[in-house]
Amino acid sequence: MSHVYWILILNLWILKATSLQSGSRTVLREIGSGGGGSDPKDYGVELNATNFDGVLKDTPATYAIVEFFAHWCPACRNYKPHYEKVARLFNGPDAVHPGIILMTRVDCALKINTGLCDKFSVSHYPMLFWGPPTKFSTGWKPNQEKSEIREVDNWRTAELLLNWINKQIGSSYGLDDEKFENEQLPSNISDPGQIAQAIYDVEEATATAFDIILEQKMIKSKTRASLIKFLQLLVAHHPSQRCRKGSAEVLVNFDEFCPLDMWSSDKHDVPTSNLKEVLHDFQICGKEVPRGYWMFCRGSRNETRGFSCGLWVLMHSLSVRIEDGESQFAFTSICDFIHNFFICEECRQHFYEMCSRVTSPFKKSRDFALWLWSAHNEINDRLMKEEASLKTGDPKFPKIIWPPKQLCPSCYHLQGPKDKGTNQIDWDQNEVFKFLMSYYGNTLISLYKGKGVLADDRANATLDDLVTSTNAVVVPIGAAFAIAIASCMFGALACYWRSRQKSRKPRRSWN
Image 1 (cartoon, rainbow, N blue to C red):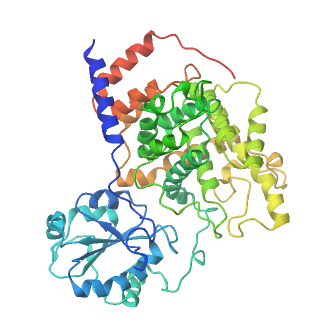
Image 2 (cartoon, rainbow, N blue to C red):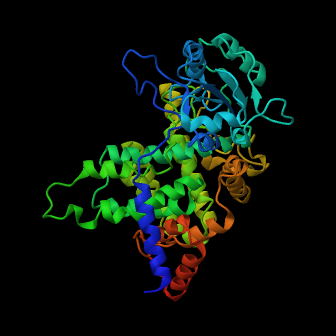
Image 3 (cartoon, helix red, strand yellow):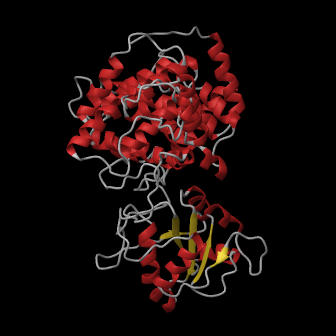
């Protein structure tokens, strides 16, 4: 056998050995988990030397506070309720002001954290530090010049700590603030940069979608192929690197935990519970997702926006990342995924009816991106009327035809009807496509670029090459190569795959 073949086998073996290990950290742990029933709820995130840099690098929060303490210290124990009162506002799925500050704690009494506490020159307990999350990796020293990490100097009560925070960021948060009473909830109508926060919502929507699939036991013989196709699309073009990797891990192992003969007539008991447990171990977008809250997609009411908004952003981001030759594959993958796995029956039927109206295959990615944009506006046009009549919409984020003129004035021809319906607007579709490419392309992933957590262009290009880009074969082999590359040996496997692709005759089909 060739050396490349053995490299592939070795990498897949390593992947399987590591992918099933239990997770060691959670960015925002479930409130109330652990401890006795009478213990107060913990909102502060416990960190240690093994996960400190990773958690702070990955958090969507703009700022972080780290409290260094010792569990044997009486003063630390007495201060904890004060710290938790403030952490309640910013951490966890019920956070009042999510995505702004990540509040964490490090126990310096544990030997594993000795070096970490020394790195921050911890001289007494408790000791609190403030700064941008990604800057904590450098540590802190007294009188250090040009450091973005600062020691918090007024923290002894919850009131004092929150006042100190308010002074740093110009806010007016209060300890009695309640969820969804945030008058500062921003509108996304006029600021295109706000879509950058949606990268975290796209991750959460992806994780939530697959949680729903598992909870509702929706993987069946007739839906298996459509799920594989959608996973292939995610492996190649999901805007989040960790979701691309997680999707590939699921795809690599798909035949093992969900074989084709699972639903054969001689198998009466389908192990759906075991399937759920195995798939949950993969955590499709990483151990920190879902986080339990929304950022760009957060509504002013608990029941509005959220998951559906995140799913739409995901689909638009996929539509602007594909190549021309992948446009029909992307169209069928998304249509089939919504048809088979979106649990809202009326929404699912409406979307698939729009898919069924398409009579010719897409040959250009531009055409597919504009079709999805038009379909989204058609849905918004219908929901605008229903929500206005029933008073069920989000008052701060009412359904509108997208994009509004505030975001893309060039998308509208100067002379056009004033009717608000999408079919009556005189769109400049060239400008609309440019807007979609920028908005759901580079702007969406700009936060990740700034944090340096995106894969380099060579890795992304290779990953794209390794996933089937037509309707030819719906099998997980392309993703198997992709995740092997993600593990190591990018060059050898890439050359091997490309040589195989050059010798294959492309197949096309129109469903």
